[in-house]
Length: 410
Length: 225
Image (tube, rainbow over the protein chains, first blue to last red):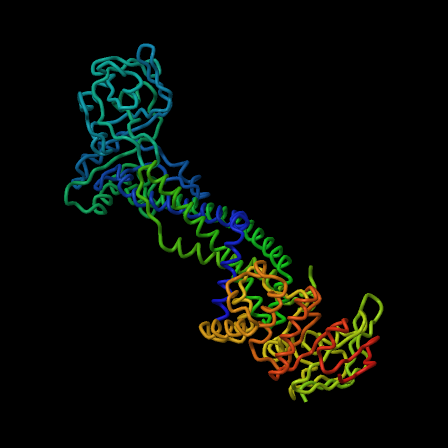
């Protein structure tokens, strides 16, 4: 009964001072908008990530010297540092000894190889890989034109290269690249193939920035002191774990790991990549929550401030209500309803802003737009609590007022 | 006996000094009386009105209202008594500025839990009784002073209180309008209501049937007209 009356009063009050209410709740609006935005975007990534991170293909896994570094395994990295490098020859050993494996290839990468054609040059922001013929299919690259690397190229250490579209766009805007020569770090390479255009990943990065030359040529020119990555494709219908175990066995034998010791290399599948993404996403979410919390705190101070002003402004009204029979609790709930309603209004506004920006970001990044229900319910709940907390002191001041003094207040 | 005040003393603390606003006052008021309380400012008439109206508690003595000892009640208990037993009409009307007449009048009903639909009906009846049935949806700033005081009187009447307490009800009105308002009080008294007027104007006090004069916290005169 009284609750409904109090809500009516609160609503009228908020409507009568729209600008003031709006300004008061800015902090809350920003706080909720931040959290909603980040959560919605991350959720969108999460939905699209399963596709995007399937770079390896469902039946491909990778072996690297180190575990994925997410910054959490403090102390662990030191152990990894002293691991022996993975050598190119391990791919050969896997090809020979693992009957569950369809194809295994070694690859190495550099990121600072500037490519030059005539007067055009790429920024050193493209990846140059040294790979084997398996490189393309295992990494999910398909040929657009020309040819990919062959066993022959590897054996003869040919100076040939397959380019991605980013390099093509810069170096050959108007020419057919096939057969042309480009220079990388002073060495000439003939362009033999072009990879199919793939566009951007969910992270906004180009997937066309990969270029590949024979791993043997790579090591001849730039040294073989890098640890290679191994990409391994499992035969159709073969259990992934079984194949991994077989590969692990071969690697342990080749690298002379004693029984009982841990592997001195790391295995990655799409699942582990997704896990490590989620790991990062969780941290981003945590930071967003903290930021949101700070904004909410600031917002709650704003609400408390305006409620104190309101209570003072309406001293006489409080006196009238008390004189004609309003008890303390009635006055208390009247002002609490007002601050809760004010906060929730700010929260809903923040929700709308957050969702709006997340929808825009979803369009821009071409990720699906999803909103977890718990976030919506959670933000309303949180803002209600903020309103309760911020309103408690001003409302109890109103409730404790002496009716005679309040009636006399000018 | 409606009101029985025995040896009531009220002391205010003003800084370091104690002000004895009421000094061992004794007073009995019966049902359907029409009493005017008079006195210069500082005489204690406002304090007496606040105590009779259950807005304030006494320091010493006893106040029995309708056979209930209300001398030492809590704030919430006093609020309940005010809601049930007392209707106020103030010099400054004390209406809620943003609420229309109907809502102002139904306010006491909200605080005693009367259902919504009943409230509207009762409030409209009370407004009609003071001749403002056609101003139910007007807000105070759309009404004249006299009309505002009528709304306040309608609000005071709505719970059928034991006492109607009017504190300088004509103080902010011109004399013609003031007379009209006094006419309403006269009629209410004829209809059986107990009315206590606080005023310092003789011609207003003349409407009552009993005049009590205060000075320095004491009753110095108690006369029936």
